[in-house]
Length: 113
Length: 112
Image 1 (tube, chains in turn orange, brown):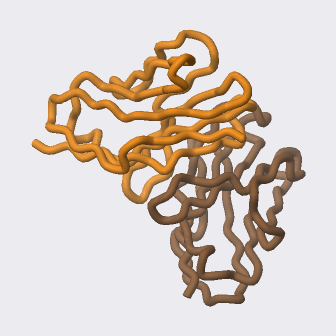
Image 2: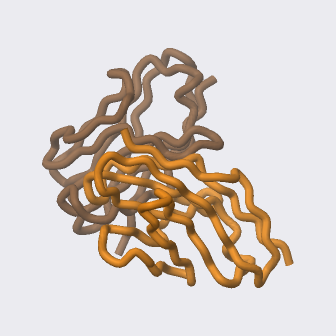
């Protein structure tokens, strides 16, 4: 069975600081990996996805993630945090393209001025 | 271009009752998936509908059932509601089971 583990239920950064949200996955087959963002009272929005092409994936809003098979990780980063980045972030895995996503428990990103 | 829409936005039900949630997919999409997101948790896959049939199902009891209509819209039905069914129910649509899923804003169900 596939699963993802997100380390840290809350991450706090200052505006302009590096954002690092951690995600480790478990999969018996080559995985498809995703990062989604959820703003209050809204649905999920896809930030970026890994589908076995380039290991460094660039997404929207300046976010990127690197697939590291040896570490079974897919951490999300952004060089400089903005106040508007404050939200809940979910890592997800699938073995069937974009369907039947298995989500982690989420990390709430707090950005202070 | 309207995205995924869900109704109602909020719903309060009593234990033992039945509830129906509705979802209209994004224009051009023909596949609908449903997820349950309990408070403080990530979404959990309930099931997926394509061509009016349930194609995949997650680890949810038979109390959870669904339907897809010819216009690709979908309903999620939950019978014999339990307190533990209180959650945000998210609908996601995609094209032909293989494309990126677009999520709706969800329906917040509270069971008292």
